[in-house]
Amino acid sequence: MDESRTARLISAVLRCYPVRWRRRHGDEAAELAALLIRDGTPAGSIAWSYLAGAVREWLTPRPGRRLSTVACALLAATCLLGVSAGLLASAGPARAAGTSQARPRAHCRPGSPEPGPAVGRSPVIIGVAGHGRSC
Amino acid sequence: MAVGRRDGGARPDVLRRVGEASVLILISLAGGAKHGYALIQDIKELADVELGPGTLYGALDRLERLGLIESLPAEDRRHPYRITVPGAAALRVHLDAVERVSAAGRLRLQLGGI
Image 1: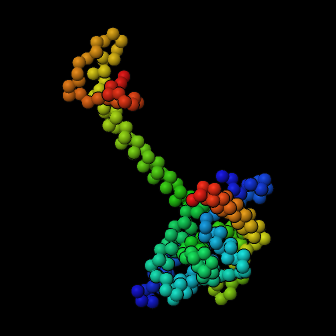
Image 2: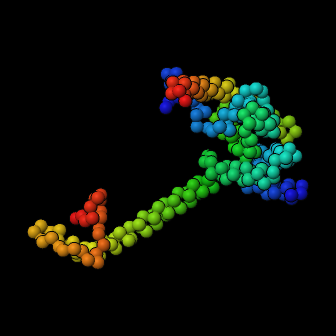
Image 3: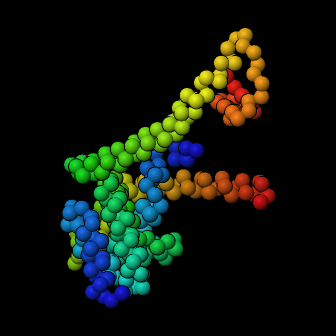
């Protein structure tokens, strides 16, 4: 990668930081990158390190930073949505199975005769280990 | 394992959760004030750890917020950093705790005959 492209890459990555950070560290960070590149550190790894640092910087909660609050809220909402979707997806088939198995369970009532072999019926195992059938 | 509280709980180990980079920076600054590039070079020599520049600035900001280091007036575009008195005290507590764990580990290895 030539020098101008490297400088452009580093400057683009440094623009990902919040303004407050750039005002304080921006010039020094660009100079540090140039020195590290001169020492033989790959520009890509420097850019990656700055990019990861920028993400951390945005996500670090600070007083008066509204965007981090928004980012945290978005992250929390995404997690909650994911968990809810996962729960729904896992609960759907179980509910469907419960409905279809409701009628054949009549044999579980007291006094009902033990049914014969369950031909073509899949066993329902809920909360009982080591048994093929449970009420 | 409450390593940092074995001394009666009076001086908690505040560096226990700040990460390796922050501890290495404090150790480097214990030898004198340095700017970013000098810190990276010193830590590479001291611990054979290549600190990424993004990690470095994140750790510097965190340590400064905790009052463990302070920024000195800029030289050209570089900001040198210096360890503060509370920073030196925190580093001492942390190194004592690490030393205790290290000694216990060595003893167990010895007793276990490994």
